[in-house]
Image (cartoon, rainbow, N blue to C red; front, side, top):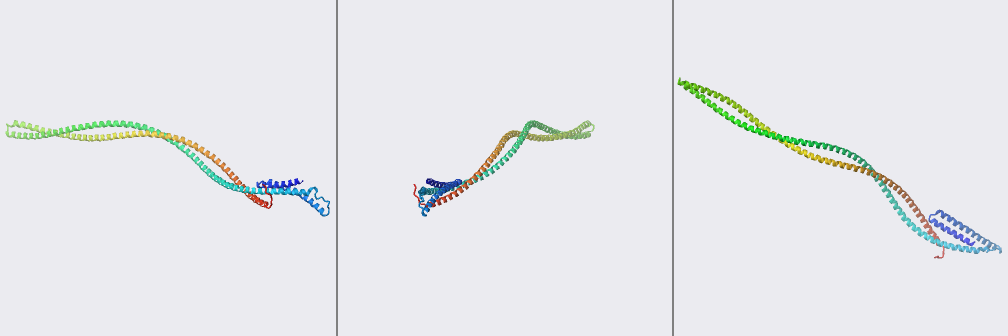
Length: 434
């Protein structure tokens, strides 16, 4: 019986100590159960112990009343009570010693855990700050993704417009190329016509030079004829003077024949004939003079016309030379234009090739922009998912922080309780156990 009492009290105290340990680790339900069991076991042991004391008290009262037949040592109650009390004291001493040790351990563990929780709290704050920064960066990333997506859409629209403009440009280049081919053909025809015109102008120049030479030769002959006509006019003047002298001599001869009478009649007839011949010669010389003057006038007119013709041929030569020079310039300009048109055709073909390359590249860029837009949408979805998970982590971290703060508060309370328990345990004098 005494062993059961001793075991009950010891077990009850152990349950109470276990309840403190459960309370330290925030095991509220196990702590309450252990406390209840410990109190129940101690209460049962205490009731049995009180019953034994009551029996001893009744025996002592019977003896005091004079009943010496009372059995004081029935069932060895005193001995059992002493042994139980001694065992209880020994167990209580061990429990107090264990309580002191556990209190010290609790205080040390509480302080270490408080320090650790302080560090964890600071780390939690830092992590919370980092998560806030991450959320801020994620929002900026989402904004950048939205802007990039808008730019991608704008680029796609610009590329479509550029592709349309390039197609229009290629059509215009093809039309320009056809026009340049036609212009080149026209330039070749003009070159041929200018060559023929140049040959015709050279032939006309040679004919003009021949005509000018002929006119110059005619002018020299006309001058020679004019000189001969002037000489004839001089001879006509001489003949006229001779006729006048002859007429005067004939008149003198007639006068002398009249003075001679019949002897001079034959001489008078001769003188009369000579006078008539002189008159006829004078008339003929005057007529010849008129004809010669008319011829000289015609010759002068022909000379003036020849001079004008020579001047006209000179102007024709100048004009033909100008035409030849102009045709040469036109030929050179047509040659240069033809060369430039060929170069322009090559450049247009090069521009057309480049336009086709740009069109192909723009289509590739359009596809890449579409892929970039799709990738940006995927990145935005991933970013939103990361943002949600980060918000969840932040919420969990806040809960952890609150739990740490609550644990810290509980540890502070446990530390204070352990200190009070240690202070209350220090009132007991116990043996030093190794």
